[in-house]
Length: 84
Image (cartoon, rainbow, N blue to C red; front, top):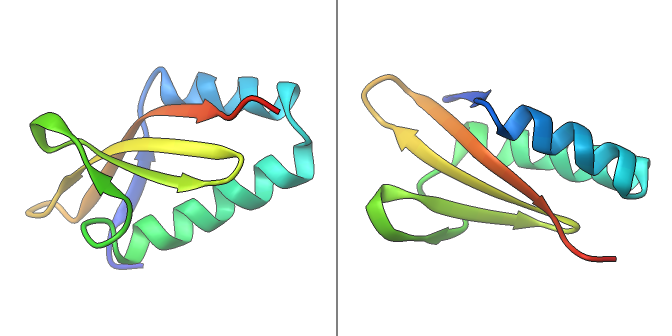
């Protein structure tokens, strides 16, 4: 990976909640894929939002994050489970 992907509160709690609310295998697969993609191409994937925020969608999850280019880090600050 070129970037370190960090889940900052409350994103870590959001991910745990998604695991208990959604199909576990599907949620885990989406989380692993997001980690891989955000670790390599965080500024090239997803859509830009206000204030340097980006959103990457890997169904059934949406990951809201910011990129620290200088520190080569991705800060995921919110994870949302799509309504099933």
